[in-house]
Length: 456
Image (cartoon, rainbow, N blue to C red; front, side):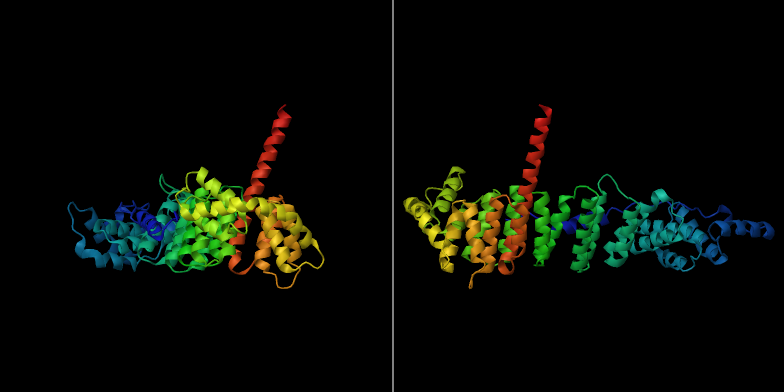
C-alpha cells in the first residue's frame, strides 16, 4: 500500500487555505470626510487636491459621486446593500488614481465580505493592490487573500501571480508557513493541468533549499512523487523518488518508493530479483508475499544460499510462516543444495576465467558469486560479460553496480547504474539512491570515529 499524499488530500489542503478569507479587511486609506461635504471654497479645494495628487493622485468628481452614496450605505445602521451590488462593480470603473483604488477597493472588498460575494471581494482586493499604497506589513496578507480568491475562481495564472506576491513579502501565519506556500504554487500548476511547470517549480524549489544548506520539507518530495505517479509521468516520478529517498530513507518510505516502481512496470523474474535484493537491504520486506516473490525470482535450485538466507530472515522476523508450503519446500530445496553448490564454485570460477569461456558460463559465475556476497569476483565476471557478444547489457550493468556497491565503490556503482536503460532504469535509479544513503552513512561513521579519536 502506498502512503503518499493523494490528490484528494492535496485538494483539501488547497480548499482549507482558500476558505480562510471570511473576514473583512480594513481599508488602509480612508476617503476624506470632507468628500461628502459641499465644497465651500474652490481655492481651498484646489490646494487640497494638489496635495492629494502629489501623494496618490487625489479623488476625481466622478469618484466622489460614485463613492459617497455607497460609503454611506455601508455605514448606515442595519443598512441592506444587497440591491447595490451592481453599483459597487460600477465604482471599480472609476478608480483611476492610487488614492481612489485604495479607498474604493477597500469599500468594494468589504461590501463583498458583507454580501459573501467572492468575485466582489477579489475585485476590491485587486484594486487595493494595484494602488501601490498597501502598507508593507500588509502586502503579504493582501496578496495571499487575492491568491485565495483567484484560486477559488480557478483563475490559476492570476492566483499564481498573487501567491508569488505573498511569497515575496514573506507572508506566514500560525498554520501557513513558507513551505506551505511553495507547495501551493506547485499545486496551482497541477490544478491548471500544467504538470511540467509544477514539477519544474518543485525541483527548482528543492534545488534552492539545498544550495542554501537548508533542509527540504518531505512534503515537497511526496507531492512530486504522488502527482507523477498518479499521472504515470516517467522518468520524472523516479527523479522525485530518488531525491525523496536520499533525504528521508526510512524503511516505510523505501517500501513506497519500491512499490511505485513495481506498480508502474511489468518486471520479469530477473528484474524482480534485483528489485527485491534492494528491498531486503533497506528493510522493506514487510509482507509474506514479498518473500514469496523474492524466493520465486531467486529460485532455490539456482541460488540456494541466497534463498535460504532470505527465508531464514523472514521467519526470524515473524513475517514468513512455516505453514507456507511454497516457502517450506523452497527452504528444503535450498538447504539440500547449498553444500554442493558451494563446492562447485572453484570449478565455475576457473571455467569462467578461461579465455575461451562462453557468455553463459561467465554470467553464471557472476550470478553465483553475487548471491554469496563475494562481490569482488562477481564484479570481475560481470565486467567480463559486458565485453561479450549477446550479453543482456542492462542486467549485467545492474548486477555489476550491485557488486561495486558491495565493495564500497560508490562513485563507480552510481556511474554503472547510470548506464542502465529500458525497463531496468527505474530499478537502477533506486539503487543509486541506496548508494547515496550508504555513502552518507559511511561518511557519518567516519566523522564520528574521527571525533572520538580526537577526544581521547
